[in-house]
Amino acid sequence: MTLTTSTLDSVIVIWHVAVNNGDGATAAAACTEDVVLGDLEGELAGRAVMQRWVESAGVRLMPRDCYDVPGGIVVAQDALPNGAGEPRTVFSTFGLRNGSISSIHRFSTLEEARAYPLAA
Image: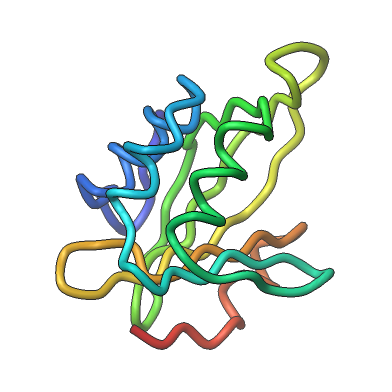
């Protein structure tokens, strides 16, 4: 993993390990109670939503690069759906509050992710 500009916050590392293991409870515990999970189709909120997504997504996310942005970090990840096939690069914003992840939004480009306004 090559890190650019920033280092990956430990709670984000914990979250990635949990996602890659399908461990929804640990991924949710790394987040605030009101964590927001979003993409181009909308947003959902709460630890229960996070836990269900991790347990059903079957995706492996390998962090590659990360960039500091106001309120959090953008992480470039190689995403492997259902743990197979060819990976594709996605960019996720991680909002951070009091040592926990307060939001995660997924984007197709680094420019979109860096422009997204994060609020802790």
